[in-house]
Length: 201
Image (cartoon, rainbow, N blue to C red; front, side):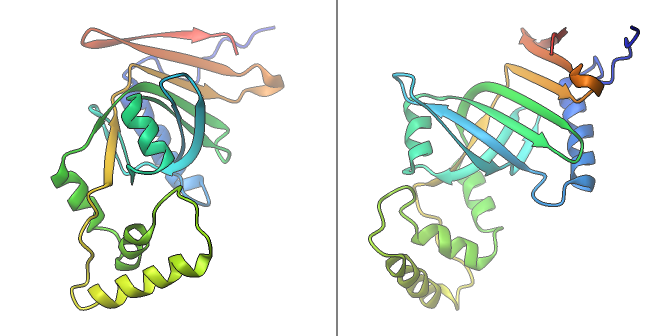
């Protein structure tokens, strides 16, 4: 059997991510920036949910959330996380691991007010992850905030609504291959650079 061709490049993992992400934006029918965010409590209880990537570059991968939500509380108690992109249209996935840092207030303000007005209202009205006795309670809050800030066209960013940047120490690329002989390449940050190696699928 001969199948030695590598489809995952050996260069800078950020450049590989950029190429794959650009292809996903062309091929995925919905939310190519959707990623699974995995967090854990200090005593090791994990949880995972889908969030949207809102910024990326050599300094890391940025997402936004309510810091008083379950994920926000877990992040602030244990500033480590993992991300997973899975693009079914391309039959590829990327796993990213590393520490988190909170974005600046200016960054959070800029992104919050770049969102549609109704999205700002929905976020400001939500006590994310908290029990809700009746959906009408939430919808009434939305209606009240919308009326209060309609003329201004924007809602003040709640102090608990913020963003986090994951600075990767490991990035792993996975590509589907025939007969489940898949290809995996894992990059580890060492000093100021990256080292990469293939893994058994």
